[in-house]
Length: 393
Image (cartoon, rainbow, N blue to C red):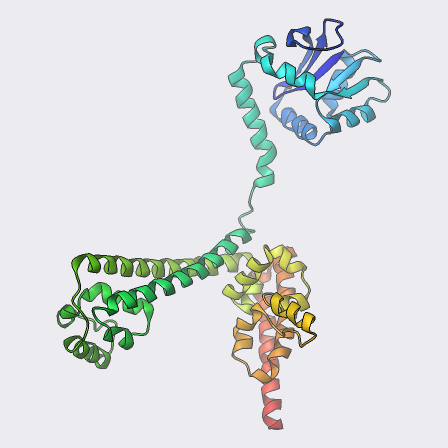
């Protein structure tokens, strides 16, 4: 009875000494023959075939030269068992799979069968593993659609976070200066103003001309003098200033994230970005998972992506189905007249499907020219429809 063991150094065949029916001790086996890989390339190719359950040529030759006809060979892989039976037809062997024997050997195999230095074996194993699976997990620099998914989701979370924090800041600082919230509607500008003035008494000494017009600045100073707010304590003020600083930091990071998303979308999907914009294109990719998945969808599906709940509700109630989903927020549709938004959504979905397929499956993306040409066609069609509607009225 022979056992086949594969490792990073090559192949080893163990032969059983005793004639016992059950193997209870690993010293019942001795080394019968050893084959060492000659080159690193040979080790990688052989290991790649073995992981797939295939038989490399060097293993086939090694078994033919070292094991007699009719012998019992035990392997540790079901796929390798069937592959060996097919490859060794002329060299008949009885091949079986028994995990129990290998588990018994593995306990003290390093003590009884020292084939190579354990440190060298570990380094060789790591080298082969990195070579085998490096290509599988390697990410192409031009196909980082996963980064786009994370970026657009983070952008939406930042918007929600900034709005929530700004609401808290307005309520918190409103106890001290409630009139300021009505005079400044922009959340970021409100946070910057709070960080600069700190308290309403310091407004007359702070120069805010960079952010406000003279008229609004005069109103703010007048409101600070007649404010009905309460006095503020130091610990409250420190928390408020920290919160306003966080809002400003989030806003600055949001600007960087927008630039990153725009550059990434132009490099990954220039045609999709050209026709529908970077943010809407990124949301479509995030909704589908990858750009490749988006390219596989028909135009009718792309048209209602993001409106699945409304679609199923309409089908259930047998009412009108939605005309658009995420693409409604594209400038071509949102800025057009309501009378032909449904028709435009169908046109735009068809061009989006074409642009996505060029970006995902085309070898040459043409620098986004396909998307820009389609956008011009849709703009021309919008003008025709507007003139026709004007004449009809």
